[in-house]
Image (cartoon, rainbow, N blue to C red; front, side, top):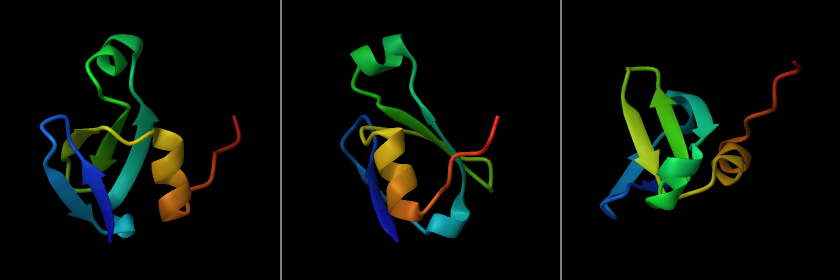
Length: 66
């Protein structure tokens, strides 16, 4: 399990296998304290304070070739 903190400072505990995608938040979102957007396989979208690169490293995601 990993711990992610949303913009209201609530902690979410997620299994790495439940995370479908992690993306860096846009500039305006970052202004409001949102660093990344996490999408889960069950359709949830969580805006979190942790950086996308840190989350990806923690769950062992690899960058896809473009």
